[in-house]
Length: 224
Length: 224
Image (cartoon, rainbow over all chains, first blue to last red; front, side, top):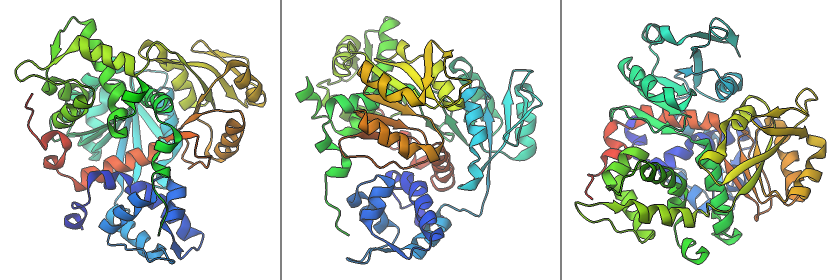
């Protein structure tokens, strides 16, 4: 399975979780097939991109029929390895961190926040959204004991690099970085960076510079 | 200026705010030039992509010299229209919304959260991070009075579509959607969607399926 899936381009791979969730909902509601137009409207990706993506999955839609929902569900489930739960920790239980803890990823995902860390004695020892909050001082011990490989970082920017260095030492493989800091880490550590200010500035720039005719959705017709 | 900038591909445009912030910091620290390698390490975009992006900006790096920081700063500042402040509202003052209100975008941006809305009487009338919180019932009146065009949506998923419909009626042009809901809106409304669960699942998928050799950073050498 890994051999197959490594051939999927990264841009396509990024859309996999999105497709998966929609197809899962379709399947739950008893639908047997779906057109690329319906998919396009639901996940807000243009239908030409969807058809190209799906061709990598070996899913070829038929004109007037669309795609087989069962096939897609089974493919996505296998490719996204839904049976293997990935344990995640969250570092920094401020407003953003607390929002994550209440989010309850497990419902739609193969990921679970096992524990959280903070420096505030008022938070250490509490349980938020079923997740225990431990002292940041004890982070290394907890990570090693539990074989955890992924961390969500929602700390102040000034603390981000130091914590990253500690996570690398503790054999973390991936970091989802919500701080504005650009982190330095060895190449084998995968860091995905989501900067809230940049997302907002990007939306504003597109509003000012791209008319509705330039949006992805309207660049092509929905054909399948 | 708009005519020029509309020629920039959307993927390049998305990286503009990121480049801008880094170049601004460089300029503040008195640096005169920067190589694509330094840029690449700082913003975590591979240097071939940076060189291609910068060629759209008319910035051609010289071998052994790099790029002129003043030129880049002036270009980005003009292109991102830093002198024009965009007024933004935030809808839903839960944990995620509160995180945004404390984020203080104005420091690095041309955007400002002018006001927030919530349904909780305990929050309405309060001020969080200098931003007043009003009742969601009064949203339309406030939007019209203040000529606001952008909304950040951090409400429960179940409330998202109804609020979107109201925003469209109130002539909002862009929505930054942080709910898991995929929103339906007319084509002239620009919606950027950030789904925290999908971001986490995407990171996990990449960790499982792409070795370090596949990451963008290591696909090419840094040449400029």
